[in-house]
Image (cartoon, rainbow, N blue to C red):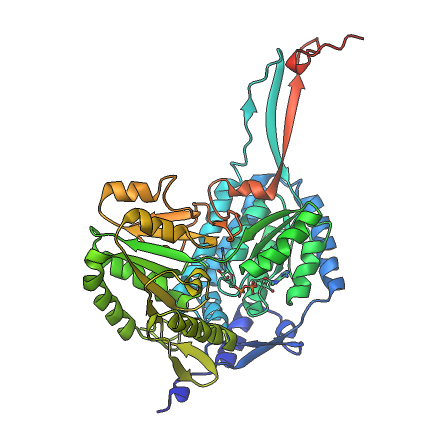
Length: 507
Ligand code: NAD
């Protein structure tokens, strides 16, 4: 049996799933943009790019919906999100299958991504009863000062291919309970999952009843469609997830018109394996964080600093894990590493490996695994003597650069010495080392973990990173405040008008 014949058609499966999820056929047939499955390389659908006029119309409709939606009490808005969560529960297997077909994730990770959507819906439903402001002490007698949080407007959501559905829900579930409307531009590589999510959302709207038309919409296309969203004066907030290059283009455009930017950009995440680390636990943590999702997570582990005293014990075990991991069709049980998203992803991986070799790196793995027109590669381990330039850039592929260290302060300095600042971790059983790593002079990332890898996130904690990762925070803690505007109110219930700071103005 050839390798190719093992791969069953992605196109037929996608058509069946889209039908079950209730996506209107004319939305994914007959359009200008082919959608390829990274699993087989086949074209699964032909979607329609939105014109700038259509993007503007979607924003106007969303703005109209916002004017009505902001008057609906927040706990009632939460009910819509609850109903949407129910639709996601019912459709979890199908939506997960579509994520696999379109983004190439192994089945358990695709189901995990849909579960994350369900989790944020639950979180947002609770939040819909907790959108609170503070009451503050005022220096003036018979006065009260407080803050009130109001709905903001239309939220533009631009998302990346690698979390084709969860990232939208991190934003939209909170935005909807906060009283906002959303216009979503998914990655041009993953529009089908976006159409499916929109269909499920519309089912929830039908059950809810009087949802204003245009509260949620999807506009498909590339950079121009994203720019139309970024430039529109009726979009007060754009949440954009993707590469640092994208954020560098989007950030200044939003600043130009004083709109808010929530940027979730590239990462270059590291882990430190200290002398006291539990090496069994570290091996599992490193293997999943570095090879999972074929290295295509923003939180993927890309740099590993191993203490010289455990290097020779740890490296052979890690190499064995790299050698034995099953690379292949992500729909098959036992596969741990699926495909790269496309040819460009594979080429960037090969370019980085060539650069690493030129910088003196010793490469194990990284070869292409022939699977028809799709791009599969064995994950690569690269032993480096120092943190060369190639190590400091994010290559969105399964490459792990491994370096030795002697002194923890040096390892922390190296881990921080990259332009990105998303996620990090240390494996240690030494309480002093653990505390130092998460202290003010430890990791400079938005996420700093102890005895778990840097990859992944859990709803409830604020997600995002520093430096070239963009500074945005989503999905937990007080990140809901980004989707609302704050008003400070001072009320006088007395009969005089004392001015603040002792100012007198008697007329
Ligand atoms: P990408 O930057 O190529 O595209 C992301 C999105 O931005 C797409 O929808 C794209 O069409 C749009 N876009 C690109 N240029 C634009 C512009 N000038 N104006 C408006 N929109 C524009 O990223 P990708 O290849 O889809 O995803 C991989 C990258 O995303 C990696 O760098 C990864 O680290 C990052 N990422 C970050 C997070 C996070 O939360 N920090 C999460 C997922 C992915």
